[in-house]
Image (tube, rainbow, N blue to C red; front, top):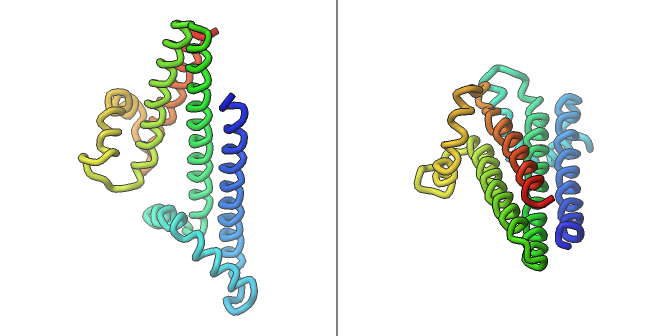
Length: 196
């Protein structure tokens, strides 16, 4: 139903948007290493691309500068972060549409076990969304009284034990990725127990 019709359109739109973003970042990377004449066509094009992509590349360049690395490589970090955001956004949208389809099918079929399975799957999906938001929020400063503070309070019980096991690498905390993999396995288990 929804997951077969709407998901394809949304997925195509988001991957197209990511592709345009990737092309701009790769063009910025190539032009910054080519070091063209600033008054020529390529130099003016490079200036426009740099101005377009600066707000996404600057945080990565600042991160590289703290470790005295080549800041011209910052578009690659921004490209990786953009890929992670696009992938998880598409996955979250797909899960949401899958849950709506499953709940509707369970109500129509009158199957409480399938309905409970999809409700549990949905609750874990909300937790996955909160962990994804927390992963993105670690790049920004926020106060405890905001929505992000609520997200941290909700995800702390599951995140803190994994953070103790896997400490952050520089400013990158990979423990959310491990938790997301484990939650994905739990979702698959719930689907096998309740739905199939």
